Structures are given as C-alpha cells and as structure tokens.
Amino acid sequence: MIICNAGVLSSPFSEAQTTTDEIERHWGVNYLAHYHLLRLLSPAIRVQPPDRDVRLIFTTCAFYAIGNPEPGQQKMSPWRALGNSKLALMMIAQYFQRHFDSHKRPDGFKPNVRCYCVDPGLVRTPMLRGFLGFGRIWGLLVYLVMWPLWYIVLKSGWEGAQTVLHCAMSPIEYGKRGEEGWLSAAYYRDCSEAKYKIHVLQCKMLMSKISKGGSHVCRRMRGTEEAIRQRN
Image (cartoon, rainbow, N blue to C red; front, side, top):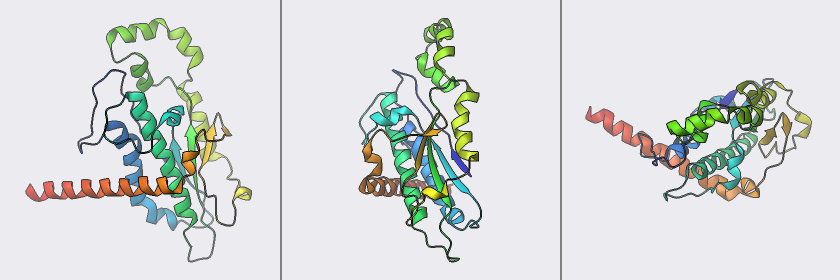
C-alpha cells in the first residue's frame, strides 16, 4: 500500500516559491514528487502476488475543481496553485489505474492494483491554520478568536483520517471490475464513494500529456543532479 499524502499550501498573499529544482512549489511537492515516486516503484507494484490487495491512495481536496491541468508558468494565487497540483495528481491517479489495468501478468491473473482519490475534507492541520491565518501574527490572533467556529466547521485530524483509513482497510469490491479492469480511480469523500466534479479527469489525452510532461521534468532533474555530482 502506498499513500501519497505529502502536500503544501502557501498562505495567501505570500511570495511565489519554488523547489530547489526551480519548479513551482505546489506543483513540485503536491504532484510531481508523487508521480516520480510511483514511476520508480511501478515495476515492483506490477509484480505483486495475485492474492495481494495492492492499493494506491492519493489524498486530494475540493480545490481540484478550480484547477487547470495545463497551468503554464504564470503567477497565480496559492489556492489556484493548489487546485492545479491536486487536479494533476488526480489525473495521474487515473493514468496509473489504466496503466496497471493494461499490464498483462505472466501468470494470467488480472491486475490487482486499485487506485483511490480521497478527499479528507477541511482538517485542522498546521498547514490550513497557516493559510487561514494569512501567514501573519495578526492572522493567527484572528484564527484564535474564531477558534469556536473553526472547531465546529473543520474536522479534527482523527476525523479527517477516517476516509483514508476506509479506503486502506475496507474490502475491495472486485465485482465492479470489468473485463478491461477498473479503468478509473475511485473517488471517496466522507467514507463513501462520490462522483468527480469535472469531466476532464477522464480525458485520456490530458492524462498522457501530464504524464509525459512529468517524465520530461524528472529526466531533466536527474540530468542536473548528475552534472552537479560530476562537478563535485
């Protein structure tokens, strides 16, 4: 089981930030890092025993609905950057589900990899606290004053984890798998399956384009790292 949960969310009005590889921070951490990890692990995932449940869980959020699968390099607000990265992550979840479904096992068994996109909801995490507090001392004070409201509206960490745990431990419904596989990653909210809000997630052309773009960036990063090692 692999749970792709790492993510960042910059506070509003903050300066645009990049990773050490000069990639927009949200795009690099929320999407590209998970994609690169799964590309490296893909051969090991495909050869898992047929009697083993293999699950890939991608944590997302409702901001994916305002995301752009081809954001380009223009400056954008933190929530827009978050939406772009989460939409790309969910499209890659669809891509990997189709990728593993198409794998022909030597033993003749059907592929046993199931991908899930999980929206845990708004959770009282330090990351969200920094966002709601605008990254400022006065914002933190306002957050504390409004704490009774946040306590009611926002989920605790324990509550937010329940949908992830549901997808991690509930039996896989193999009866819903067709002859060609699942074909689409399942989407879960509040411990129940839900429908995707936008149809672009099912666009095979965009899935392939995002995957190829991610592969190109990963190769470029590896080339840069190798050049640095050789100079040192």
